[in-house]
Image (cartoon, rainbow, N blue to C red; front, side):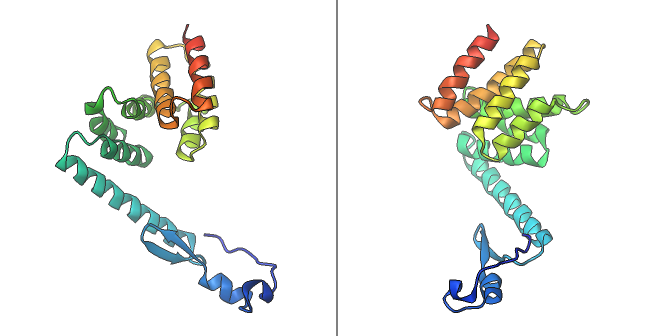
Length: 188
């Protein structure tokens, strides 16, 4: 995490100096705590280790119960984030009928198919926004990608990704309602 210059006076921290306050702030990462002043590489390494541990935990959960869709979704996301789309597809494919798992698998297929040629800018923006939790931006970008796509199979994959997002948002969420209507209109 980058160091930030603090312009606050010592009195803003109950008599502690700004330097002491900055040095005692910490950022929680899983069950570990890292000093906020540590170099970014250390944070990145800790985050990568945390993600590997999450992957091991979800894989173990799937080994114990092959029908654990929540573990499959989490592991699928982690594998997609790491760029391991083939493994993500093998984890997610047994969960046909689960809209989120199917959407994640569709995302992996889009990325895998686009390995030979770069994916469109709208798709990249959509996946980045989804990863950041910005569903509105992700759905807008997917609408754009859907409008640009000419191949029916590609349009279906984009639709599945959107349906996964609708499912995560919930049927009554305004974004889900609006974009469901727009997808139906675009596909007709």
